[in-house]
Figure 1 (cartoon, rainbow, N blue to C red):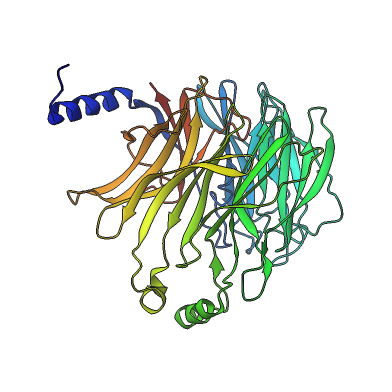
Figure 2 (figure 1 turned 90 degrees about the vertical axis):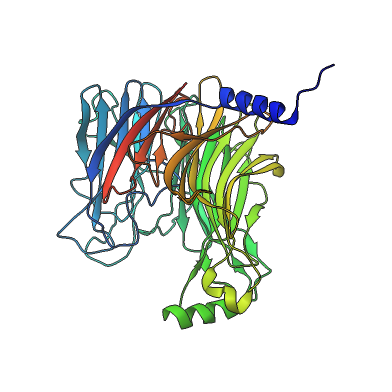
Length: 458
């Protein structure tokens, strides 16, 4: 048997990888709306754990956030609704009466309706105060019609505020919804809308307990990715509490002058096999940068056809402000990470791209999953920094993850302007699997403009 020379073998493997790489074709790239910063701690992408982009049939819907010039923060915004058909984008609705702080995520079912999660304040003239969650039901065929207002049913009398940290997810084929909304630093309330249109189940998701802290406390979880399929609900979010390390907190106060600084460095996951009848399972810690005061950001979550849960997130190893005093030998890195979880156990871990200090500087940003009708799983993500030649990099890339969690080659997506942050028309909000990846968000150099793109994956 003749053996190929090493060089020949490498060339052959490279050719095979190139042949198997996805071929993204940009079909549409256009602006949707511009906005004025609200200076209230939120912004059009603040609900990034959910989405403001939904496809129903031939129409794409986008949720927008408008800053009211005659209102003061925090509740100085209102939602807007846009629709795109073959005639382009059109503003089809906006909140004429309420004020809010945060963007309003969307969800939908095949053929309609379209749903919008709103959180209008009950104290419009106050800096902060109570709010009342609502779900607006739009006719997808005629979104300009006045929507029906649905009032979620809760398990008690929760005191919601303008800081909702809410999640809005849909089981598109099952035609069911779940709304989850934080209450203070202790828990999230959730309400389930079944296929008969009834808020038939409610409950409370209590946060994991931080017994290891010098002052034990609940670990509030924010910016979660939530998915629902056949009433199984999966929830994955990041810790968001005031710096629990007292020594680090004191040092940060010296730097900033602030009494507070928030930690975002532990990624937690929980699930229930049936939200209508079974409790959420014990929390599982998926990732942590606790030792070096790093940073973790949730990216996306997908429930595979076999029930496996696919999770995407980014990590930063350390807070460089603290390195010299507390961990001088630590090296900085930024990574895009992937894991497969089954029954609460992490079965697979992969680092999809990493920028490591003094080694490489192609820094990955946030990523999202995209699922095609034949159940192929892709990851779309942003990359910045410099490549090995020193060339400046600011681009989006696409790679495929195989059924056995193998990672295919990443290819550049030829957008005129790359998306630095983005929502997708995700199955988590009821959009169907598609050969086309659809995006909504700001682009590099785009200022305060939210744009849309459609990318066909050949």
